[in-house]
Image (tube, rainbow, N blue to C red; front, side, top):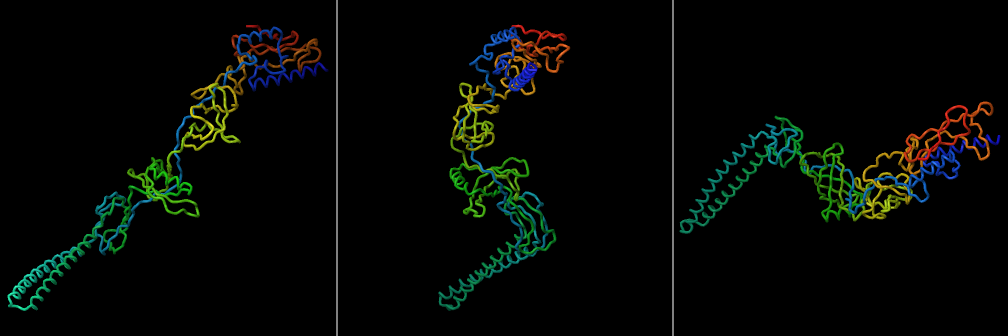
Length: 493
């Protein structure tokens, strides 16, 4: 009974050892307390010869090959300070074209939705009444001019008679006053002509600036009165973008404007058009006490007409560059419970875990303000299970899958075969068999009948990818079996 319990215990410990060796990819010969797990003196000698053939075969003090990690070099530089917000597009000029005179629409020259230039004719009213008034004024001016000429001649004649004593002074004064009245009458006629000419010009509705026409609100033949809207004209280039920023950004924005380092990009939130750039030209003089924000405005060039008045846009405001930073890829900075970490590869190819202070992140780069120096190598891929002082190997490219025969950590689900990372022969995963103690006869295997038929030994599973210089040792077997094929003895290379 005691012998059977001892056999079962040996089997359980052997299975546990094999599981640990499979998970951690550690050769069985290096597991503490398992030195008894050897096949025979010949197998032990074979294992010793294999260890001698491999220089670093699990000897104390030998260093294992480092894990391969991808690294990048930290560089000194600056990052742009930006703010993201949502704004609205406004037109600097949008007016409803109308007329100052009453009249009937005689022609709509412009096309709805068309681009027009300053001075282009949009629509006309019936000009006949205004044209008649202008012609009347011109005739009245001719009449007034003749009256003026006559009054001037009469005044000259009366002056000559008064000087000779043939006429009275009163007659001369009356003639001079009549000449002045004729002059004034002529001026009034000229002013009336100018006024009526303005009314005649107002029957032609022209564009006051470059822009885009909206929809006509009248039709040909409609009677319009002064202030009646006819069509809306909207300036499309340049446009204005209005937005709000937190009050904490007021001083940085004003500083950037003074230094001419500010910038603004606007992108439509409903399309994939390219960003439109511009300059900030207005900052409001008050801060909204309810929201703690201030309003600002920028002028944007809209040559390609990618923006539209009333449209919402995503705005990026540049406040200039930061101070000196150490730049690393974003994936190099790892968050932890105590802050942010980077894994630095020292010149000795060991890991130095650093606590760093990130400043800001823009795009694919993060700026570090403390804890890292320019020129140091940081790990960007493969940070999992790295520890302080661990030896690693650098690679400038993403690491390729390493065969299990030379990997420090095996791939789960793949048996460890061949030469392990520690340099000792890695046994395949054979079924454990009991090991007889010294002086104790071999007992039957678990599950074999206690009496009667002798125990049947299972042959050891040969290694599938053993290194040529070190053959995998076979597990020990009990006394020669009655049936089956005996396990082949391991031979020294």
